[in-house]
Amino acid sequence: MYHLFIYIYLLGVAIASLFSTKVKRMWRGERQAFDVLRSKVDPQAHYIWFHAASLGEFEQGRPLIELIRRRFPAYRILLTFFSPSGYEVRKDYQGADIICYLPLDTISNARRFLRLVRPEIAFFIKYEFWYNYLHILKHRNIPTYSVSSIFREGQVFFKWYGRSYAKVLNCFTRFFVQNEQSRLLLARIGITDVDVVGDTRFDRVLQIKQTAPELPIVEAFRQSHPVFVAGSSWPPDEDIFIRFFNEHRDWRLIIAPHVIAEDHLQQILSKLNRKAVRYTCTTPGDAREADCLLIDCFGLLSGIYRYGDVAYVGGGFGVGIHNVLEAAVVPVIFGPNNRRFQEAQGLFAAQGGFEIDDYASFEHTMRRFVDDSSIRQEAGTRASTFVSSLAGATETIFDNVFPAGNQSPLNKGI
Image (cartoon, rainbow, N blue to C red; front, side, top):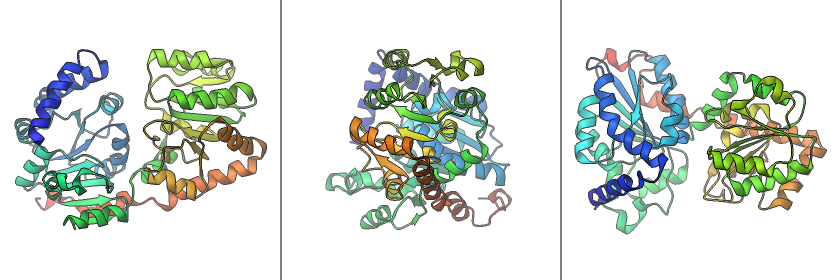
């Protein structure tokens, strides 16, 4: 059944690529992946393979990639993506030696891929459970780990009709899960090689805080004004916070929308009645005179939050909120669809995160921050403390996978 689904999916992608630029990029990237591997894989090198579906999963895997890179520089890193939203943003990432799309999970693709790369260790980030790749990795006795994975009762693995597919979980050497509920669910179906280590994104947030480069345009825009940063926003989010900032002109506004398409950017600009500039079309001098800064490129958001006084993370009026952790250097506001996101729930419980469900509740929350800076600062401290208290998953995973510490497995022969 899985194989039938894959071939139906393959046909659907081929058709959809005729109408969608994003799907076309993915379709082309998957077909070109073997050319990339043939030209770049060194047959004499030792590879560790990381696979992330998209940008968010990459950010979870990144601390581990960079820790391995520092401790074991003799290894080469292969990084694969499923989605263009990950690959297109991070295709020039310097922490990996080879970056490409993952060819679709057919038996022939998986065999061909693994024959070319011959990885010695594989890491799959969060929700990646590709049946053929994983079974062939297991058949070849290649240690394979699931990092920052999280499991819920409603997933197919725990349904009667998903018992056959759930066997894919036996292909992993070990799971490093985010919470105890995940461990208990896996134990229920006989998976016991599990460690509860938390989420590596907490480590990534601290890493960004310490190492993010300065952004002169954002610095000039901020000056001494209080700044509100809206990240990964969608139109329902924008309708709320833009209305507030059109009426409250003592704050400045940075918007980094989730979809950076010209029609969406123009839609945002049409809603603003204050002076706005686009990041890629401005200078520090012009930014200094603007009230709103529209981020019209990818890759900056995680480093922008630290320039703000309050942050808003979008998606909560749609399928679900985006990454609240990278915003948690200041108080974080988000929409109502956040129940499935334990980091948002934790931030809310720590009183560093604030849920709103309409304009009135947003205005009430912002009024408190605008009228009393001490409330705003205390909430920001609580958000930062929440992140710091849960950091450390990366080192725990590393110590488990490489129990000899700084001694490279290459010295012993894996």
